[in-house]
Structure formats: C-alpha cells, structure tokens
Image 1 (cartoon, rainbow, N blue to C red):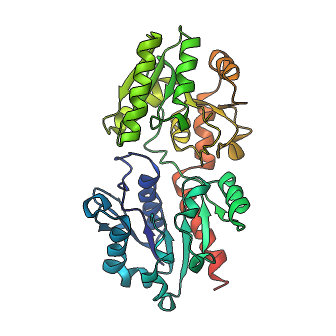
Image 2 (image 1 turned 30 degrees about the vertical axis):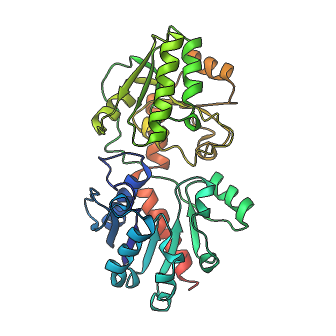
Image 3 (image 1 turned 45 degrees about the vertical axis):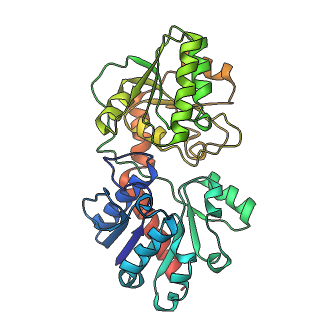
Length: 356
C-alpha cells in the first residue's frame, strides 16, 4: 500500500533533531508504517530524516515568507504521488485537503485521506473550511477529541503518540536531580509554578532544561532567570540542551521526578510527549490531572502521580512520591511503543476504506 505522510513546513521531522517534538515523531510514524511493509513517503521540511520511509523535501516557510506558499509548493511538486496514494495522513500546517489546489483534484483521489492534528483542540480551527468538514480527523488524545466535539460538533479519532523505546531507555546513572522541567519555557507549561515549588523546597535540586527558538521563548526564559536571581534560588540550575538528544537522555535519567505541572487554566496539554519520554527512561512523572491528555490513559499507572493542581499537592508529591522505574518503562512499552501509532493508523484505514 502507498502511504503519504505530510508534515509541516515549519520544523524538521527527525527524531535526533527534536525541537518541539511532534514534527519529529511524524518521521517515526512514517518509518514504522514502512517497516510494516508499506511504500511510504514523508513530505517534510529540510533537515528532516527518515530510516525507512522515502522523504520528499519542502522548503521551510521562513525562507519563503509564507506558510501557505510553502505548502502549495509541496502540493505542486508532489501532486502525482499524493493523488496516487491509498492513504494520506495530512499533518500539514494548513491542511492541504481544505485548500483549492487539492479540492479541484479530489475526483482523482480514490484512497482515504485523514486530517491529523497533534496539538490541543484549537489547532482544529487552522484551517477548517466547509469543504473539508467531512474529512475524517485524528486528534492526539481522548481529551482533545472530546474538546473538539464540544466546540465543532464532530468527533475525531484519538491516536496518541508512540515513543521510540530504543532511543528513550534507562541508563545506569545517578539520579542527582530531584525535579526536572524539560519543556519550552512558558507559563503554559508551568515554569512559574516550578520556580514557586523550588522556593518552597530549597533542600531539593531543581533543573530547567530547554533551548529557546522564538521571541516568546526568550521572554519567558528571561522572566525565569530574573525570578531565580531575585528570589535567590540557588537550588535551581538552568541547563541548555543545545539541540542535543544525548543531553535530553542524560537529564531524563538523572531526574528522580519529571515535572509536568500544567497549571495555566486556559492551556490544554494534548498528550504529554516529554512525560512519555521520561517514563520510557524509567523516570516517574508528577502532573496535574486537569487539561492533561495523558490522564485518560494512565489513571492506574503507579509511576505517575496525578495532583489536583495545587502547589501543596505538588510539594507533597515531590517529598513522598515513590515508584518503580521498571513500571514506568513498562507502561510505555505496553501502551506507547513505536509500532502502536502506525498500527492504529492502519486500523483506521481498514475501517474507513470500506466505506468509501
């Protein structure tokens, strides 16, 4: 079967070049679909890399100045391959199906096309033209699917991330970090709450780890550094990742607790990719159960401590949380191993193609 996975023209799809996460995992999806015996093409921006799928490059939109133009060029250059596919997984930023350049050629397409959004529910608005409301959609979690149904009156399928367990694995290394924050620097991700907890727990070592890629990132990084200096938080260290996968793996393994405290009420964490990566390395996670997509899949996982969102509950968790590292990793191996995402998309194809 011929499958085309369309990524964005924004960030690379490359597991060893993990900037934000979701784009890189489209390369993993394409590779696993190929390993299952399919002919797979990944349309992705420069610096993307696959192991088994064939890659078709599209220009980064920053060089062109327009996301719409970049993805139009992707369509123009690879139209024949896209239209000849049996299955298209469209994770493009603009949703190629909804644009006029596909709409007028859709009679040539005889396969199954799905619209894939791996963010929170508002990502389904960008764009969502009337022309493609009938296209089957895939959300990253049951939580997002539920929110989309409430907002847009249709319910997408829920297919969560898979983790490359061969890369994210335990290391024999001392756990000398009490609490690790490894997300983009932003209030949405709980960076301010993280620093408040550090102030309350001055005998515990807290580590912030990330790179900055935008003005917004630098803004929140500067805010965090000023708070650390003003409050005299000597127990907090900032470690830049420098785009290093090895550094990420080391920090995941050094941490006793991975902090996933999403306390900004307007923000929804669609799934929690970094939480899954940490668990795959055998590190326990402390998180807020509200607005957190992983909660629906991990209510019974003893390697995740779900709080009610209060700082008091987080303090209690950091002081007392005890877990089995093997259970943390086994949870990922059983529910999110790298083959599962590909298999779930193929199951969706088999179900829907019969109705076309």
